[in-house]
Length: 398
Image 1: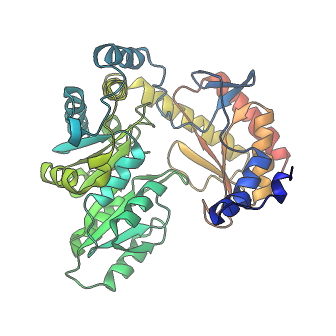
Image 2 (image 1 turned 90 degrees about the horizontal axis):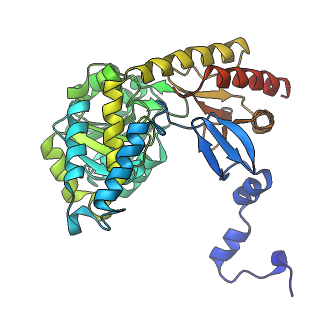
């Protein structure tokens, strides 16, 4: 029998699969797709060994909140596991409408539509409104979900330098005044931890009559009054046309939403294939998101603890003179600049029981290879002590 590497590929696609360097290197260094057999708060277990999770987006630590878990359990008992289809085909349920109404009121918009994944929501925030004749202006460092929406829209896209309103203004100046324009931004750029310069972008949008879409997945629940997000943070909710976000960060679940005025949501429901053809958000996911949203408003101590932990974590990294790319939020990169350094730093943290994630070019700009970390309200003082010790050890290894 021929050895696998000597076997002739059945098709060109099989040949591509068998010769892919990215997959070969990922499997060799075992950096992604780890499986944990147990989780309690910030602790996870792999092959019987305990780790502190330092790359989760559970900013407020609500994943194991008793009220949130109970809400999910009750929803399954009452409604079952799924609605088994798209809302266009077999209708929504009252719990979809209730969640949408509460989310819309919370972020300060007229209406909202919820999705079974944040990726779908953010893609729909573009595909639901962009026409092939429009011009999209997108930050170079947007999340993949937005790039998917941009590509699917068929509209021409101009990329501007990260979080740079001046470069955007220059690009807009090359276009015809009456061309339909859409600005696509993130409220918080998750890889860098940067907050969008939203006032400058909104001012430019007013000048050129651009439609503004903001993905606030990492600002929602963290910034603004009671966690209403980056648009509220700047007092610009009414000036931003579409806000999209995910439930898998501060709301400790799965799914996402798009919020806007009623006319815009109705239009998106008519034109976004991701909205029309994707399965509805499950009963349990709806219930946990709704309960987490209520906890966010009624228990401010979770945000207070998040910012306390963030202050200490920043101090730890600052004392070690680690480059955090001027992060302003709980998403904090440790920029090491070289793939080898990143790998050995990551391995050293793993040795000390701290789980993080690697991000290297082309996922980040050249020279910005990094360890992505995120702090949570559920990290304890003991967790932070262990993280500090592990960071000291990891730095000594590079």
